[in-house]
Image 1 (spheres, rainbow, N blue to C red):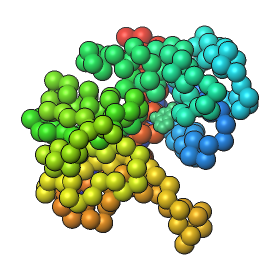
Image 2: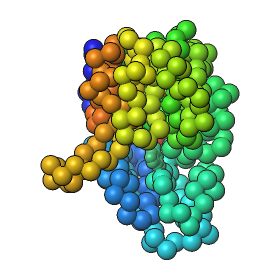
Image 3: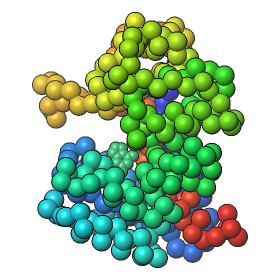
Length: 294
Ligand code: GUN
């Protein structure tokens, strides 16, 4: 069994991106990070995004509207960021508080600044295999992790567990694309799937993105499979200072001995997502600069 080291692969990618940023003409790329409320995971993710941006020489602008912000006020904020020539990328941290219509906010972001890839147009471009679009950071990070771990999906059976807009659906479409590294046969499983383990046992590559701690167990795995664990679940643990530990969607102790390759949690997919966000921000900046600098 080989561990896929997301920290090391992300560090390589970040070093590459740092060189790219340094070579860009004009001002540094600028990313606006919008967070509403104090969801602890969101606070930590936005802090990490801010820190990584600084490390790369990408400017970040953190905007923290009051928890009482209305839909109209938040939409006005997005409109202002869309119109601001100093801003290249806009990210609205999900989940938003429930009084807000998250999908409407995702659709409000100018597709050319949608570095999160949640706008209808950018999701559609994945289906159309149009590389000018922005691919959401987690699915893009998974594909990059596979490529850089020499896992070629061509002809393989990829089974995706979960159909979320943020991970399951886009990663399934990416694995399906007719291009180098992809070209897989893809099955998407979800809460309505019957006899789940009979399907997951057919997977050459299993991508678990259901958000249920240690849901994937050894009996669900074909020996030699590659397992990508997208879950980041907080499980109560009195022995930890924080009172919790992080665990994936995969029961690592029983599953890992069966795999040819597997991502750990933490240190697998997580670090890649931030690197891909920076990649998208640089891409947004470049596309705004125009073709001469590409
Ligand atoms: N919440 C969980 N993952 C993501 C992500 O990739 N982008 C945003 N904006 N929110 C998230």
